[in-house]
Every structure is written in C-alpha cells, then in structure tokens.
Length: 128
Image (tube, rainbow, N blue to C red; front, side, top):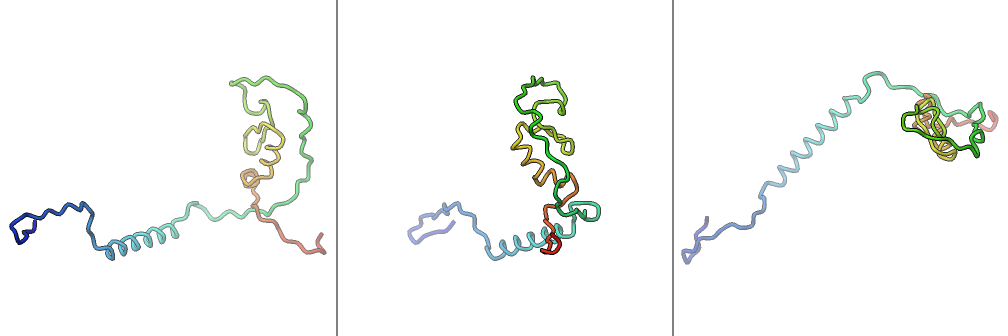
C-alpha cells in the first residue's frame, strides 16, 4: 500500500493480472513448438503407412429397383441386414433410401473400407 501526501492510504483495486508479457508469450511459443515436435515424431498409426489403390470404376450394376414399391415391417430386434432400406455389407450399415445409398457407396468411408484412396489416377488420351 502506498502513502499519499495527505496521509491517505492508496489501494490497488484494478484486479487485473500483471505479468511480463514477453516472457509469457515466449513460454507459450516454446510449449507449442515442443508439442508440434512431439506430434511430428509420434505417429498416430503403429504400423507402416497403408498404401491404398486409386479409385476405379465399378464392374457391377447397382440394384436400386429391387425394392421399389415394397413395404416392410421394421422391428427393433431385427438384425441389420434384413431391415428396411439398403444394407452395405462392407461397412455394416443400413441406409434408408436409394439416393443416400448411392452417396454412401461413392463416399470416402465406403471407399476406404474397400481399400481405395480417393485419388483418381490420371490417364492420357491414348490410354482411354
């Protein structure tokens, strides 16, 4: 507490945190660099990186018309495959309509489950 000239006691009531900004920011930068270097050396996967094949076209026809106009009773104890909708045996999921099923089989999750990357192989005009 500080004394003023007329013997009144001054009180510090700013309640703000006072610190050395340069030192704090340097410490934050060191911590961030340390975390980044640890993350760089620490791999998420425990094995070697997986090499996936590029995308290729389907060699089969997708059957979307087989359930057109049919009704089906859905019970909560039924297994996934005979439920209403389209069942994907690769991802073990049920999709409720044909548009979402097409989105699923062309999507990233399904293609990764098949072992393919989402990269398309570039070809020349002579290869087509």
